[in-house]
Amino acid sequence: MEFISVKDFAAAYGVSERTVRNYCLQGKIAGAQLVGKTWSIPADTLLPQRKRRLVSPLLEALREQMSCGLKGGIYHRTQVDLTYNSNHIEGSRLTKEQTRYIFETKTMGVSGVPIRVDDIIETTNHFRCIDFIIEHAEEPLSEGLIKRLHALLKRGTSDADRSWFAVGDYKRLPNEVGERETVAPEEVAVAMRALLREYNGIGKVVLEDILDFHYRLEVIHPFQDGNGRVGRLIMFKECLAHGIVPFIITEELKMFYYRGLDRWKQTPGYLIDTCLTAQDQYKSLLNYFRIPHR
Image 1: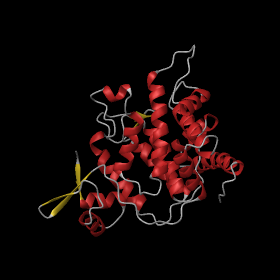
Image 2: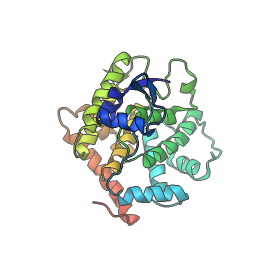
Image 3: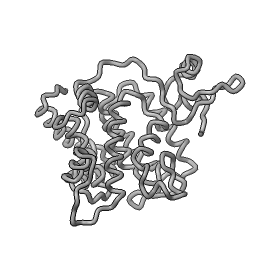
Image 4: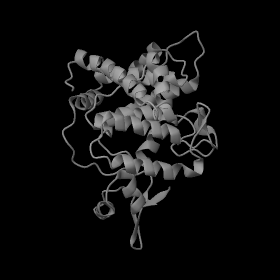
């Protein structure tokens, strides 16, 4: 198990070192160990949840429907739409109906077309990832939370059996995205902590801040694979956390989404407009299910 210092933990969450030490003394940080006069904290431990503003009607509905297993509501629709579209962007061959069937029955129907086992595993894993972000929506972003999302997404896949593929941890080999270089493996941890420190230091997070975080996360490309799906899950989570209507990038918006990421620094309006279009689509769902929103 990897441990980090109070200073690094505080920086990752954007809180003071004094606050972290108090949490350690009060036993609120799981696994924290006092070595001499210094606290060591497991790197994947989450910050204790603090009192926050009232949850949005959407987050309340998602949590209620998730807990009771309600079918045919916004939780059900979000699980199917977000999982299908995000996986499909990354090359999954499962259809939307197959995705829906897996979610509803926890089984896979017989098909005449060969289906990759990893597509099925990553689909069921993605359902769990969505449950995770709903449960932890109000917690600040941290390395531990982001790594846990990756672990949930990739566990049990063929990648998990490869010695060089670090499930739930940062990449060990250089990678690229769209033929562009990304941050070197040995520099990822420092880059991620700097990104989280800056993001968690924002007073009032708005949609543009979430998109900027997503862009910078993709530039770092911290994991060997699964970066796009983890990044889109984080965007959905952060919208829930800050009372912003979330959105799902569909197949129809995929190329506009890629263009927006590619041109974020020069023309941020491309990505903003694409996500606002996706947001309007999700608002239509909220209207149908009679869930209030801004």
